[in-house]
Image (cartoon, rainbow, N blue to C red):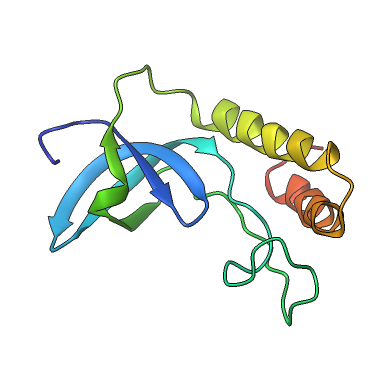
Length: 124
């Protein structure tokens, strides 16, 4: 996969565009360039459940952050690389809109954690 200069990679519940830096075994080191899908909030082991010991606030990976991703989750990306900040805002707003449209407890709790991220992302 290193022969490709730009890839799309799924990491936890987010999807990113980045540059493959290194391969080791069944993992690829990716340098993040953009966010295509914002990570879901909450406990990954108990998806869509609110009554868990810790409801995690999950931030998107930062621009230029490097992360090891299972190579099976890495695909060639042929489109233009979006601007990181614009892609973060778009991905954040898409997740927020998806949650607003649902009226369940999980969506409401997720919206609360997303609201906390607005400050971290400088959206307000």
